[in-house]
Length: 383
Ligand SMILES: *Cc1c(COP(=O)(O)O)cnc(C)c1O
Image (cartoon, rainbow, N blue to C red; front, side, top):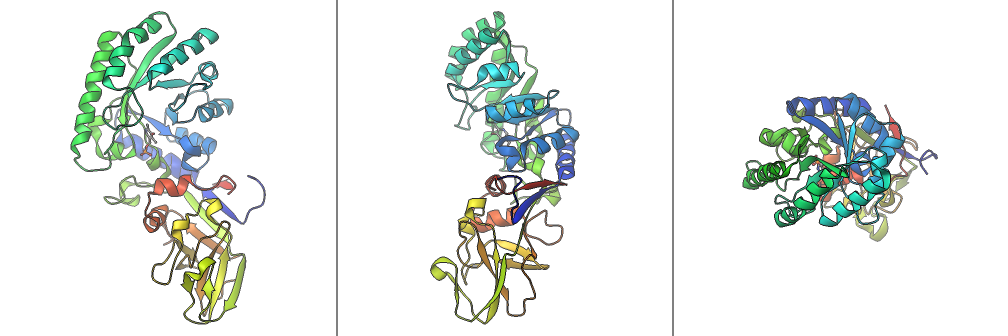
């Protein structure tokens, strides 16, 4: 689908990505920056976003999926370190080692997998121990790590692995002064000390996501891992906007009106007529729907406006239900809009257009979800 003609596009400002990384690098002080480009760079496109982040000073790239790590290397991004962290038995670990990708070690079984891949390829696996310091998600628990350390150090002595990093993830980085951040940092530092005592020579200790880069300097350590903020969105929208954080949202989602027509007062719009026109008016059809990633939760009623858009310099809202491929706007009785006119769904907000954060608030979610859910079929255009 990508490359085919489409009545909508996501315009991605790569200079904004580079600039955001520069801002984050300043906030990170002496720590290096790993730009997190998982989930197709939060919907912005893996390779152009990765290159823009590197141009902004990132020296590491991080992805959840092994396929994305391999895609970075295949595309010729060979200089920066790449870390991949979410895989299950059967993952192409040998390919990752051949591609010089660092792998996370988050479960006991993964050591056997990594050692087997190292033997099969003759490579030494560079591993980062993922420790569950309190998030309660992926990562080795304290007892699991204690049990694993002897085998891990034997594998290191054999040359199968080298433990280059220890890392973890915070549960409340976005909450000011949350006591769990200090508690997790304490567990993290104890784990680092114990692993070094066992014989690890760590290159990098890393704990901070976007919110922690911006708000918790005490946990920057050697490397920080911002994701959302790389794309210019605020990870702490209830405390600071993108602009207040010095970030520029990189994505603008645009479509073109497919139809404009007059309808009478009392006309229900879209499935189940959840919005009914209150006067003779003009409606416009926007050719984007939930199959493209427009949340159905952005549907609007007469009482509760749906997702916000900008058309002809004015702010409108989704009227009625968001459908699979389209939604409807009530353009008003005096509308002069014509088919083909630009609809800005969200953008940086500099021209009073709505932002991904506005959509997140309308839909009761976070801006992470608004940008990552954008369908792969919507063309990305890079400026
Ligand atoms: C997604 C992710 C990040 C980046 O988080 P942001 O909140 O987007 O900055 C960092 N580390 C891990 C382990 C992640 O999964």
